Amino acid sequence: MALFRITALRVTETHKALPALSVLLRNASEATDLKAVLAKKIPQEQERVKSFRKAHGATKVGEVTVDMMYGGMRGIKGLVCETSVLDADEGIRFRGYSIPECQKLLPKAKGGSEPLPEGLFWLLITGDIPTQEQSNAISVEWASRAGLPSHVVTMLNNFPPSLHPMSQFSAAVTALNSESKFAKAYSDGVHKTKYWEYVYEDSMDLIAKLPVIAATIYRNTYKSGKGIGAIDPHKDWSANFCQMLGYDNAEFTELMRLYLTIHSDHEGGNVSAHTVHLVGSALSDPYLSFAAGMNGLAGPLHGLANQEVLIFLRKIQAALGDNPTDDKLKEFIWSTLKSGQVVPGYGHAVLRKTDPRYTCQREFAQKHLPKDPMFKLVSQVYKIVPPILMETGKVKNPWPNVDAHSGVLLQYYGMTEMNYYTVLFGVSRALGVLASLVWDRALGLPIERPKSMSTDGLMKALKA
Ligand code: AMX
Image (cartoon, rainbow, N blue to C red; front, side, top):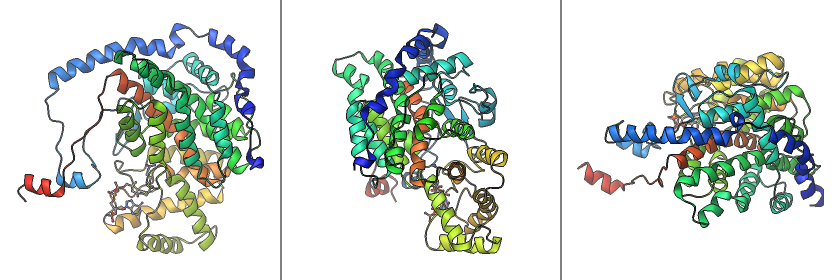
């Protein structure tokens, strides 16, 4: 076990940077103070929602069929999510902005061309594209909040490397709830109108700490626990994360900025987002709510698909070599389907076209790794799989989703440990679901409790 240890000191070395941090934090002005910006916006939005509900509270939005009840509630409009909306054909829009628009409009790192996740978070939580200064202020603030309590470090260091990284991730986040300002304020009897402020504080702390947790898991599980180094308050969130993971390739850092931006949010109904929202509605603190969502993300039909895709590609390579013929690949895909398995990375519950998150990763690959054999295979799979899935006659969306591409990019830069990929997805997903959680409490949304029925009761009600 000693081999896999890193010391608490190493992780909390962020404190070394404190003098530099305090200067940077002092530079924050009212315009770059996200909490102050939100405090102004929230009463306006509360008023807008209140008057909308007063005028239209009893208006019907849609209907529920029996198939929807047995079919995973597919298509039921039953949730409000402010941060993003998913269109079946166009894909995700973050607060109204498409991925190419975000790539163009959001602040970048010096010398970089991909958006900073800090800027995306500002956009998700406020609805406004931030200035460079606002985005930089978030980088500094997250650096200042990144230290882990020693019990979480000890816990991480004692996990066997055989424990799946997602289990380590979720368990560590759960244990972090010792730090919850919301839980403490609630037990101290804080007024409900102030809930959002504490959920905001916990969310900012949690987002700041996630790369440290994730990097510790990576180093412990795959790199014999060799130290993760210190947070540099002059670097952005992704650059610090890459450095802690042990990657110093500027191109990989750019990939990570793109990756952490595009995986952040996919409206409110997907398993991870919905779970965080649901658990948060019981007033479980943001750590517990987010950990619950991560257990959902760890499912192979959801976030674990990025791991499954690479395993699938490796299986193809092992069976057919690096350059399979189209016919051999078709045979392989059909035999997968006939053995009752899904083709990972293809299909979606809402999307009906190629996922724009796939497209922007493909563009990144075309620019940086056009000759990579695995990328060539992914392109060939993109040509072969959709017609086959259409031919089955049952798959509603034969096109690739985000997970069909991400692993290929990561392995190109040396991150070949595919069991780890979903942790990266989880770090990113925090941005969307925690921004939403702040708004859930700001809008005073109640505990979630839809009505279920038994088959007997349903038959009786429909006189069937
Ligand atoms: N390969 C094989 N069969 C598939 C398929 C795929 N990629 N996608 C859908 N199907 C099958 C379903 O299993 C279902 O079969 P059944 O009637 O025998 O049960 C049928 O097609 C109809 O399903 P659907 O309505 O098209 O999809 P859905 O909304 O029920 O499920 C999803 C969506 C993503 C779970 C499904 O497409 C799938 O399993 N894809 C592979 C796993 C994957 O890539 N998941 C990641 C999704 C994105 C994410 O959350 N990160």
